[in-house]
Length: 237
Image 1 (cartoon, rainbow, N blue to C red):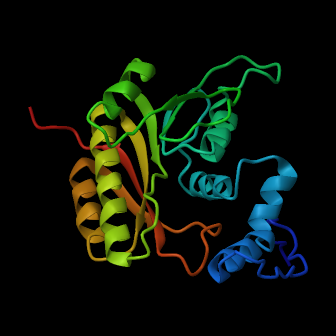
Image 2 (cartoon, rainbow, N blue to C red; image 1 turned 180 degrees about the vertical axis):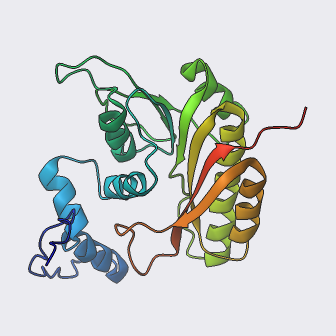
């Protein structure tokens, strides 16, 4: 019998319970308990990744194979740097391990990000009028991949959160169409809902290959979904 591939996370740890402290909301206690008992959180800490989200990009790239040595990567909504960390490793933009630097990783976020070897981090709001121009200036040319794990702060109102993240994804796709090489890839995070199919159709007009994908590292109860567009359609002369 053939053995299955070794998963990213090897074992389920014993559940650790968290008591509600004075002044802490029950929802905060629930979130903290989930974090403490999340195997992806624990594995990220063990191997030195900047958060569980790094496993999502690993799994997306293992499926679609776009983080290639020498590639030029734009990471929108980069904080705390987990996606840039995975990208830097796979495109070999990190020259600290005795190898020649070949790839490029440019990350942008409204939050400060701790420095990372192999990545250049910019602080700014991509959704502002000057945001895309700031990234283009730092990139200094075309990109092979545009990643967007951008998400607004949750309001607790599902429709509002859905519309806001769709707007961010739309802006990322529009930017990607402008800066990607012909065989480039764009990956955007969305929340499932009424407006997601319209964005999917918009991407279909610009990219030949469009897929929906929910990585295993996404929580099962989350409406989170990633849209992947690959190979730009050529404009008619």
